[in-house]
Image 1: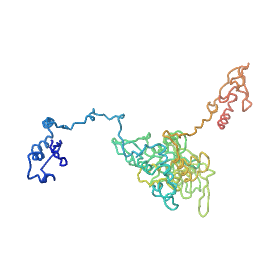
Image 2 (image 1 turned 180 degrees about the vertical axis):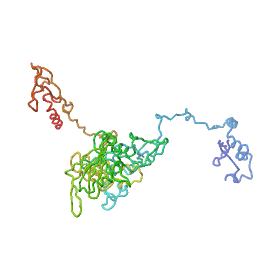
Image 3 (image 1 turned 45 degrees about the vertical axis):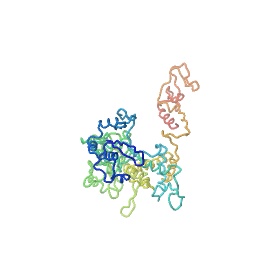
Image 4 (image 1 turned 90 degrees about the vertical axis):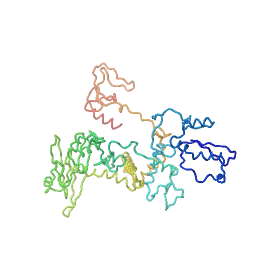
Length: 543
């Protein structure tokens, strides 16, 4: 459809044609244009034709029902009027495009950081800011660390972080942080895809500086299942009971190492202790009565009756054979109860350096813990020690004060890593662990001033040359016979000296015995079978 109009500002009596589609006129206007009001009583034919083109019924019907027809377009073009038939512009004419990885990819713009792409160095700076903020109390608004006001001893933050990163950049990176790029599963409901908060954990603290080396997110009844009833994320130990499966999963990195694992009463399950023994882990768990019942294969009432008249500190072991495996229940008489521990190992030997005291019948008495009880009492607080140190005296979670669950779990992992690093440093240097805030400030400083590149290296850092390894470190220790018709080994010529005797024996380096054996780590040293072990220990101790 097209209609002709006149523009009042143009006084050349030119006609302008407007071509449009999907245009509908329902009724004519009651008031004409302002410049045509006086001419309404004296219309001329030309003006009538111009105004009539707005309200002619056939024009309205044509537009409403069919739009601009090919006949109308042909007629307009015959009159010399250029008509746009609503086809695509020439520059937009292209074959259908198929989206491929080479062409582009879909992205979630909510995870895009405003400005330059994030670098590894910048990410460490953001973490350094968080750790540095956690060194100070009473600063509830993180924006105060970028305040333009002068530093005041009684108000605001005591330092400024502007020299390391701007506040807008810090906020943009924090808002864009995501911890998974996987979409939630479609074939089952996973309540833990983004939200988790409870953990099973295991720590090693033999020398008093515990390190939490394994954590497992608790799922409980919300553990996701597939439509067929199977677990969505199965472990390698699904054939066992739930508790036994968890015990095996938590100790998987130390299977077949012969290490001892001490557990609280929540894991006093006979099947789990026996399953750990099958994979080369010696587990022991404190036994407690759950409601009205004792754990399976633990006759708790009879055991307490057995220790009723025994002296304080007495100990015995109740031995059973279950599935061709010895199952032990170690019992130890305390002042108000009988301590019971289930395991597949251990002897009831008193530990000389672990003495405890009890106030019984108006007097103090002392006794030595037996081996299983001593091990339990010394290790039961290792996990708690790590958690307590995370909050002593300021917790990273308290300063970040985020309510978004993924951030809260991230702060937990960061704070555990901080405590592990602190205790590992003390272990390596064989010194007491330093104060948490002292270590945190040093850690924050290293993060804020880091020069890490995207590959994880440090730019312009000095590369320390590797120590040249001794031959004894590269050669396996074993006894070999020297060749026939040879004497001692000449280190300068690196060859055996020739002699006329076919089987010449030489005196052992450590004893008077004469033999023809030597160790490849040092051919100049002749060794007998009895002194070979002594030689191996001495060489390894000097490496």
